[in-house]
Length: 300
Image 1 (cartoon, rainbow, N blue to C red):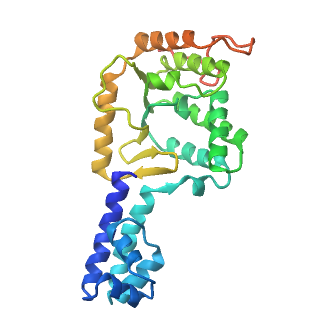
Image 2: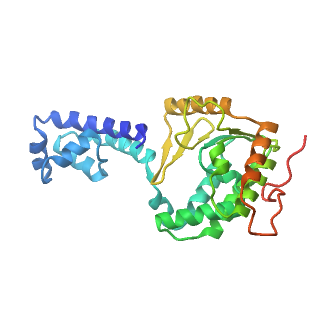
Image 3: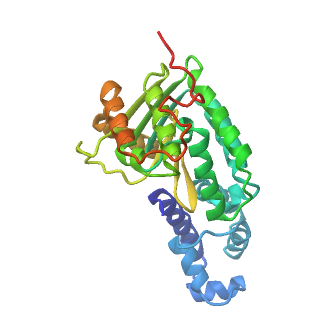
């Protein structure tokens, strides 16, 4: 669980504890007053081990006779829910719904910084690579496999790479290049697309080789949207970090990842080396030309 999420829960729990103590009741006695069975639920809420519902907050403030505290507690609860958003709740109507939201968020972002340690980010994926990822996500979360619409929306988001005035900075680890996400022809096509991406005018694209020292560690991927939001994806959830201190922390980490990456000719040599190490494609129609989804590189 994100330290941000846990800290937000603990802060909310601490405030609930303060209010409960004003009643002079211990946890067991307070649970009786609330009509709850046992004191364990009170303890979990106060320790931040469980997030309260809005109804819990209504009951809590009523039992403490401080209804004026309800608004404050709701603000804190909203912060907790902002940090943690379950994938199944986001994806219940299909993986394409989530992509539509990302397209909108990216369209309202002037500076997008992306780090990925195990996969190629959606903004640089080929349709075939994206399809493999969406099929996996649909199966994992048992949601509607609206893969065609999801792929179309992901390709639509890539149009932003060619809009003047926008800035994109992507850093991958060498693992992201080598992690097999589909048949050899899919991976070869994806690496070809990354070769073209190194020449896009609005994109700074780097790769961290295995041989380069990386003190910060590649713990997880993240997106930084301007200076207002950090998105962190896990298998079970998406974290949305909005506190200035956390955004600054991730900006500092991104800077260290940037320092460890190689760019330009060095990045192209590394991508080409990885491409040549892959098994021969089973699709004889494949060539090592870049996928047209990115389009021709911008020229000065």
